[in-house]
Image (cartoon, rainbow, N blue to C red; front, side, top):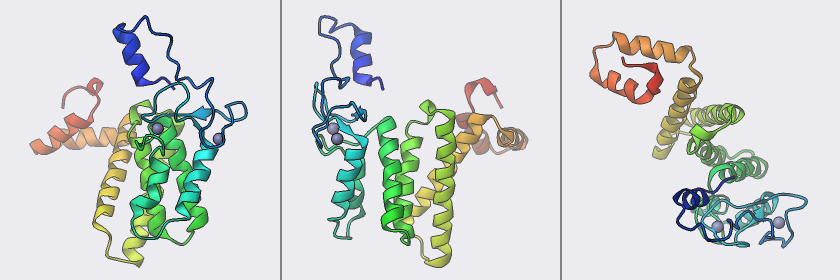
Length: 225
Ligand SMILES: [Zn+2]
Ligand SMILES: [Zn+2]
């Protein structure tokens, strides 16, 4: 994936005398297993910079995070999730496709390790859903579909907690809101019937709040309401 930092530098033309960007990882090795990228591509999308810093195989990152989780003391869920969200080199969050891929591995891990722990699964699903949401405009159609499925499963599990083990943690309401918001974005993106209904509703409504909301949500090509 193109690095924003490279694009910025090239775009500015300020550093044109520098050698070509060297963070493509072709000479790097995985910092976890010390192997190259022949059998599995090396990944890096965090704040690590340099020719050989911070590259790793997704499978190695997954194994590392899994082993960290086995040391978890069961108290702070951040301690449980951080190995799946933060690069252990630069301690910054993974970005873009790598964030999505490792979040997907996290969901699989939690399903295997905690098949009966609904709350743990909600945490992992929310993490995955937000990985999609944060780069929504750059997602492929198949990824948007998976984002929608992830949001659906998340909503289902939150409803199950509401029914079976209330009260709901306050922040799960935020999870719900973000899941519905993502569904709204997907619907708007697809130009589905929901969009037309939304336009119809807001065009009939005298409520300025609804109209303002609609204008914020609608793509510019949809015209004014
Ligand atoms: Zn490796
Ligand atoms: Zn890093």
